[in-house]
Amino acid sequence: MTPDGDAVLDLPRSSPEAHGVPSEALARLLRRWEDSGLEPHAVVVLRDGHVVAEASWAPYDCDRPGLVYSVSKTVTACAVGFAVAEGRLDLQDRLVDLFPEAASVAGPRAAALTLHDVLAMRTGHREDTLVHRGRGVTTFPQTFLAREPEDEVGSFVYHNGATLLAALAVQRATGERLTDYLRPRLFEPVGITGTSWQSSEGLDIGFSGLHVSTESVARLGELVRCDGLWRGRRVLPEGWVQQMTAVHTDTSAHPESADWQQGYGYQMWRCRHDAVRADGAFGQFSVVVPDARLVLALTSCTDRTQGTLDAVWEELLPALSDEPLPPDPDAAARLAEWLATRSLPVRASSAEPTGDGPWRSEHTPVPDHPRLTAVTVRRGTPGDAADWVLTVDDDGIVEVPCGDGSWAGARQTPYAATGGWSAPDTFEATVAAVETPHALSVRLHAGTVSARWNGVPLGPPVLGLLHAPDADGRTR
Image 1 (cartoon, rainbow, N blue to C red):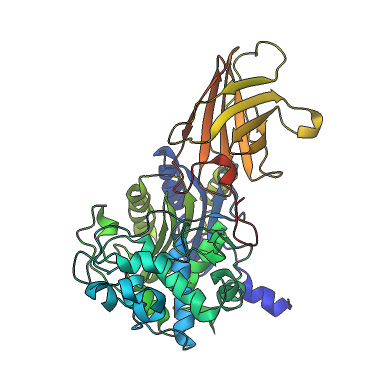
Image 2: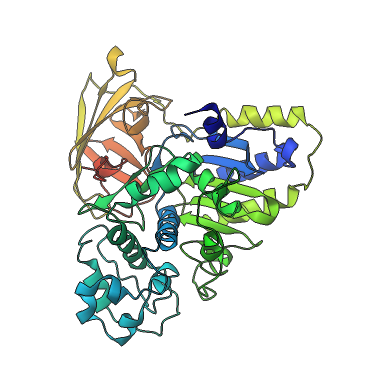
């Protein structure tokens, strides 16, 4: 790439105060997230297109691609925008025309549904039509159209099946997987690298499964903030960001909290403060506040996502200045020092184990851990670069270096672990699947394993599947 090209793709770094952001306000926001137990993993904050703060909590990293769940939907909407601009699709295309092999099973309401309706999740269904995530993808148009909407077109339900139909329409119209179609149109022009997308039957699933870095999530938000321009160059088709961020569907009756009641666009949520966001399960966010010239990207694992947004509105947004602030080197130094020491909680030994090991414990499968059968811990060797090594038998063997009082393993594997002996016969550890939001905590005692997730994965809750897919979109 030429030097000019590098400059176009670069995200410049700057001090917070130079862009009207008090370092103390950033510190308050991030401490509030951490102190509230929201489990942030990585954050990138942009003002005027400059990175004014970035942090990651060990063992996570801002630059490592990870599963962003339904942030994938926003990227799928970008793919639809390109296909519409190229004349391959039209927003008023009926689904029965896009998928004629399924037309015969459609009732009158289903037969009237358009690409616009699925993008805006206004299909009239009362429940998601997608029951088995990532299975039966090629026959899903028949499944979807056979399910007659209970209500008139225009009513909202959060609907993975609708996004899957949009993703399938793009892939049928272009003859390419979403990943391949978007690489020259979106990913490369914006500097989004290291992408992978979960696929099924050779098709990217669209509604979830995209793995990108937290910085890439910030780049997506900056592209939206700039109306589809990247450093002045048109990337998204003209007018498409307005379409994506306009309210197409009323969500005021949504059972979630305030920022889920502001309306839904094309695979993006409206927020208070005239903001908009890409939103993935467990707190994967790209929050865009155009009036404040602000983009905030967060990857995390929490079920208290309204609290995550409340902190932005209450701690950061009111503190922003329209003009640069005087330098505050002391506050900036305190913030930088604090950011450099972030880590998720570690486990450390408070006792010595009985014997020399290895120590193996068994697990009886349960719904949240249907294939977990055993965990073994042994002492680390110099070649392991860790105090302990865990072997987790969870539909396949996952071997993870484990730090005692620290995190280990993330450089060598898609996993990291921390653990230690809380009693001579009890070993406790946390295994983070660092290419996803999820972590598995285990307790080995008297030959038995007990286990729990920080958040039960929405796909199969199996540790061995929790990593970025390969080039073909497979995790196995």
